[in-house]
Amino acid sequence: MLDDQGFGSKLMVEIRQRLAQGPDPLRPEDSDHLVKWIFKMIARIESGGLEGNYRRCWLQTDLLEIYFQMRRLWFLGPKKSFKYLKQHDQAAYNLFSTMYENNNNLEMLKEVAQYVTHV
Image (cartoon, rainbow, N blue to C red; front, side, top):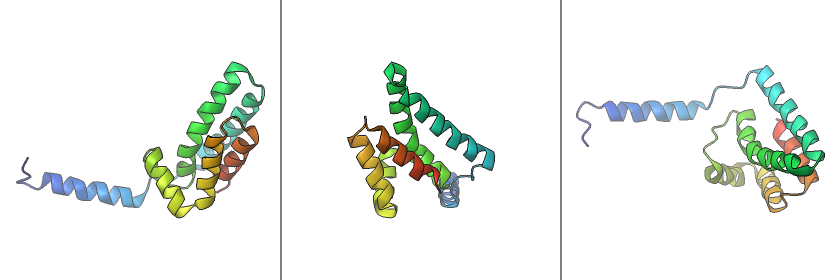
């Protein structure tokens, strides 16, 4: 493909600029809603059973994306996210790593939730 009129080049510049700006910040009410949702999920997980186990898996997955949302960072999937954490937030990297290695450990899930929500 040729970019004779520079549309592709212009688009790439705009994309790079938007990525550099970061995502729009969460509104305070959205941030509050996320925090409440996380801890409601934990309460439901504590009840156990099939639904509790499902919610545990769901929350363990969503916490990674929420970490980035709460910090006004792009979530670019797990591979890039873990690389970012390893380079920029070793404590978070260690917490997530331990949680995923011990995915039935509710106390570890709570610890990650606390870390994610205390920005």
